[in-house]
Length: 210
Image (cartoon, rainbow, N blue to C red; front, side, top):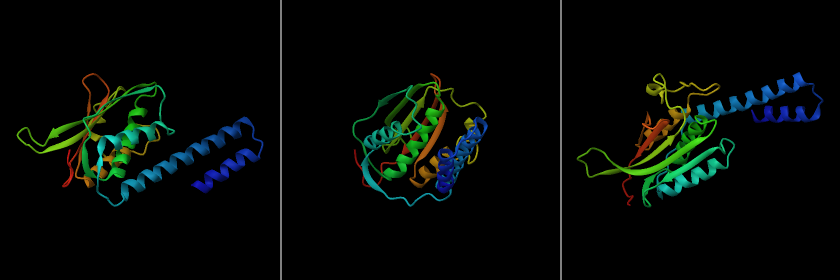
């Protein structure tokens, strides 16, 4: 795909095109980018990399992931970010896999707010059961888009299900697959104030503390 894309760019710069031919070349370039993303999504879903556990500050990983995303091509400058983190919390998990999860969720949130909105990201403690003293940590991501429709909501994490034009249907499916590997879980809902909310629950890990 990279060689095809490179050849297209060379042709675009080296030849004189009329308006119709230029439009066709632009379509070809976009389709190459779409296919490349589809292949990348499929490979990540079908062959997730080996999990490498380490202890790290979860808030710091979220902040770093957000900074990277905001400086990437998918960021919408009309989106405002709100964060409300707990005090520094250390967990034992795979920070690179967590970053991939966050990237996919940030991308979904921005896609849901093409005209701008608010991206709200927070961390909090959650108990396994109301009676349990064992705590897990949650990452909650809320956007102010249109939320999930009744058809989409029960199929959020189903591979290849998508309502996006040109979407692969693998973004949230990959997120769930990664979290399954990390012994975490994810759920989606519509926020009472509007928009979509996704909650990630992660175990603290055997040697992590807070």
